[in-house]
Image (cartoon, rainbow, N blue to C red; front, side):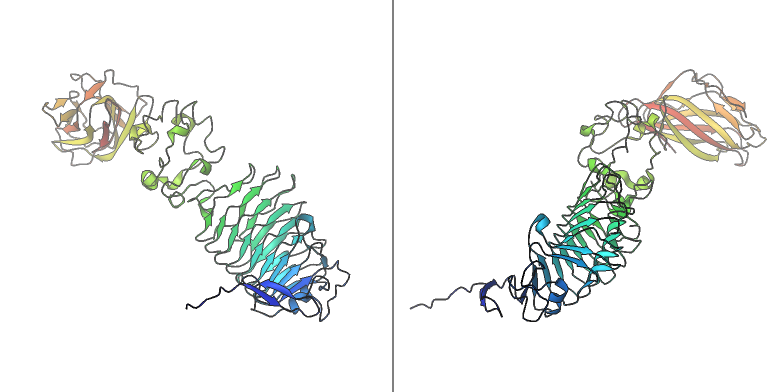
Length: 523
């Protein structure tokens, strides 16, 4: 015959001194349970009380004194309980829980009426849940000060009035602090922040809270969170909702030394700043920059761009729409090294015209150089401008100064003398040297650049038989009357003379690509 094995119930029958026996769920309540209710007729801060709701303690502080550390003692604060605090409540028994019962205005209420911390958590693993802090009636330093590890503040409501400068303060001892499911209201001018970090704290978790950071006129003087320039490490701040009450509210203040933060996703009202998205963290928001570190792969989406970051003046009608930005259109690989300094003025209105960036141009995460302005491939109304750094003229030979890929339309080429050419006969011309079957072709006939001084210019007319034009030190009109189609290959400068390499010239071309992928780069 088999053996019948029973299943153990978590319910435990417990006799209570001075009260009726209770059946407890030991999965939640492993230690003693004490009751606090200032409104009960039988309430007293006296030994033998506190074991039931009919003979409760009158104050939370006295109940804490009856607890035993690290056995899971619980203090149940009954609906309607109210205390005006003339001194701090010292949570100095490790592992205890202070749980308020009652909803809304029936939740237990505390009013700080002295200069100090309403509750000071000085031992580890304390839980404070479902209490309501009214506006302080004296200059309180905090509603709750966290000065021990693993503290949890859950479901607490705080009304911050003129005397509530900082609602929660966290010292360096407050490691692994958690604030969750709380509700916070600014009700007057005076509050600096909701949570202030007064020391280096590791791994605080702040989640699922609702914070209304102004009363419609007066907002936090610092921010919802004041990191106080402390090197707080690995904070997790997510699933919070930050309201503005129709006044501008800063969410994160003094966070320049924060390390390893994960911030977001959070919800922000229109005037609550520091809106975040996954991959964009607190340290990313320097004054005018989006840094390479701030842009992780695929980390920029619509929520990452503030309402006025791209204005109508910068983008002509229809130029950039939602369809233009595919899910992974901006990636770390695409932005690469030049992403370090994208400032507010980096994209001028003229840089993006009605058809400058189109769906056809944005394919496979690629924007070709000719679509961009004011860079190594500068786009003007004439075409793309490419400049070759100044270099010595070749000595009785020719040398490539530009490389051509695909078919391009050469609209202009200019040489600018940066160091005077030596006093020696030097017949100089430009020519195109294709990589295909065609022959090398002179783009002009020669001009003697003997003794050409610095600030001289060289140009061509576009007619191959005409000599290259040389002018000196004055603004010059556009000289190339005819445009030239250049095949893949090189554009070369040919010098008959030898000035010992003293003369130096910077060359610039303006061109238009005639086929996809075509372009000119400095050789």
